[in-house]
Image (cartoon, rainbow, N blue to C red):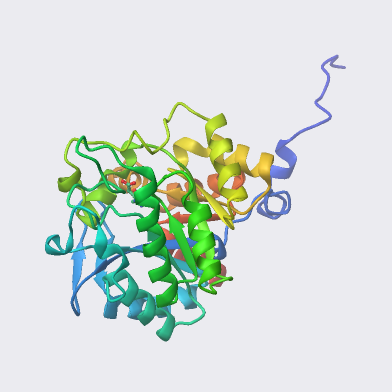
Length: 336
Ligand code: PBG
C-alpha cells in the first residue's frame, strides 16, 4: 500500500469534458457585448483600406448603411462613428464639429433612418476637425484650453443629438464636459440621449493606427495629448475620473485602451458597479493582426481570448474593430 495521499480536490475534473467546462464557465461573450467602431468617408460608393489596420475599411455613408443591416442581423447593438474629415474642412477652432450638415451628422441621420434599432454612438472631441490634431482649442503655446473647449464640445454634442444620435461619447478628457453636455441636452429636451464618457482615457501610444485612419496623425505631428489624457502610471486617478463623470451625469463609462489596462476595468467595475465599457483600440487590433498575418498567432483564437479576457475583467461592453469578425464566428459556431 502506498502511503501517498491522493488529492481530494482535482480541479482538472471539471476541465475533463467540454460539457463541464461549459457548465463552470464564469464569463460569457456574445455579440450583444460588442460595439463596432467605423470610419466614415465623404462621397458615395467610397471604400478605402487602412494600411495599419488590415481588414478595416473606411466607408462612405451609403456603404455604411449597407453594412448596418449585417450588424443588426448579427446582433451587434451599436456602432461608434468616426468621421474622416477632408483637410479643407479643418480649422484652428474645429468648428466643423457642430456643422448640422457635417459628415458625422449625415451618417447618424442615414443610419437611424435605415436601421432604427441599431444604436448610434458619436465621438465628441475636436481632433478630426482641428488643423493641429488636438482634441480641443489651443492657445499660442499649443496648450489645450479647457473651458472654451467644453463650450465647443457642447455645440458638437447637441448637433449629434439633433441628428438623432442615441449616445454621445466625449473622448476629449476636458474637465467638466460631462456636466456641461448633460445640462445642454436636458435643456434641449434630449432627456434620453445617453452619455458614454471616455472617463479613463490614457495618453497612449496604442492610438497610432486610429490617427492614421482618421487622418489626424500628420496634423498632430510630434505633439502628444499628455496634458489632458491620463498618465499610464495612474490607477486611483481613474477611479476619481470615473466617479466625477458619474456625478456629472454619465450613463456609461469607458476605459481605454483595453488589454494593457484591464486592472483599471476590474477596479472600476468592482468599486463603482456601473455600466463599464472598454475600448480595444486600434493599436491592439494592429498587433493581433500583424502577428496573425505572420503566422505567429492564431488570429481567431487570440481575438476571442482577448475579448473574453475583457469580459472576465468586468467589461459589460467592448468597442472593437473585431466586432463583425467575432460576431460572425460566434454565429457560425452556434450553427455548427
Ligand atoms: C479622439 C479619439 C481617439 C481614439 C478614439 N477617439 C484618438 C486619440 O485620442 O488620439 C482612439 C481609438 C483607437 O485607437 O482605436 N478623441
